[in-house]
Amino acid sequence: QVQLVESGGGLVQAGDSLRLSCAASGRSFSMNPMGWFRQVPGKEREFVAAISRSGTSTYYADAVKGRFTISRDNAKNTVYLQMNSLKPKDTAVYYCAASSGLGIKTLRTNYDSWGQGTRVTVSS
Image 1 (spheres, rainbow, N blue to C red):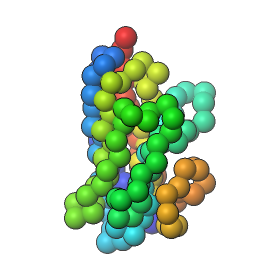
Image 2 (cartoon, rainbow, N blue to C red):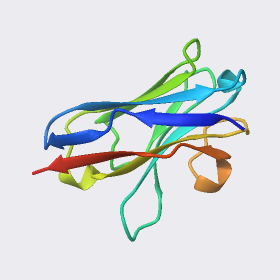
Image 3 (cartoon, one colour):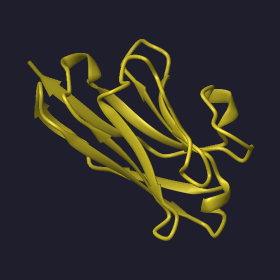
Image 4 (tube, helix red, strand yellow):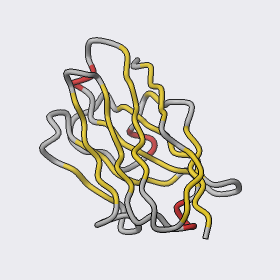
């Protein structure tokens, strides 16, 4: 499995931007499709964005499309989530995840490794 560590969360105001980072350990990072999920208390963890192994393909949840951008740097074993025009409803703990499968994944069950999460709070 891949070990993942997220960073970059914080408290911001509506309309601000944040960039989350997820550093991965292990030599197989470039072989893993990656994803970002988020979770608020009392709700299930939901899909946010995913990226293919090479980074050429991406996919987004409708709620973040046009505002968030997922990217990766395989040389640095890092995946990013650029979040612009943040809204209070984006408040959540954000998790990075790695899949051992092929192609972009949107289901939690398709991911094998998870980070500990980083909290994002957007005030109105």
